[in-house]
Image (tube, rainbow, N blue to C red):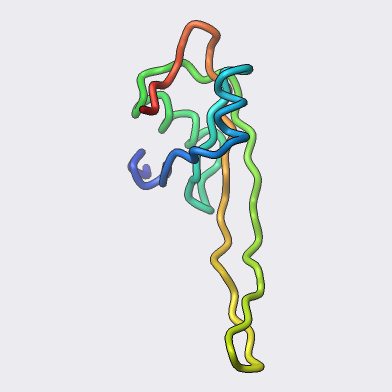
Amino acid sequence: MKNSADIIKQVLLTEKGTMLSDEQNKFLFKVAIDANKVEIKRAVEELFDVRVMAVNTMRRKGKKRRQRTAQFGMTAASKRAVVTLHAEDSINLI
């Protein structure tokens, strides 16, 4: 079984994430690529002591980046999770 801190990499504080947390009680997390929805749900419940109602995930492919040569590199791929909390629960990010 994976450690919760290894599954949840960081909380994403973006403009869209702030709007979702204020209006719909949803929070954005950057998670491990190989984590599934059940593992993400358990990790959030364990780390923040809240009740999770739903987890939606999205994989983001790395982009091509060119430096001053003709060779291309790639940025790292990542995975994001949008976690919906119970109406009575909240996460204080600040």
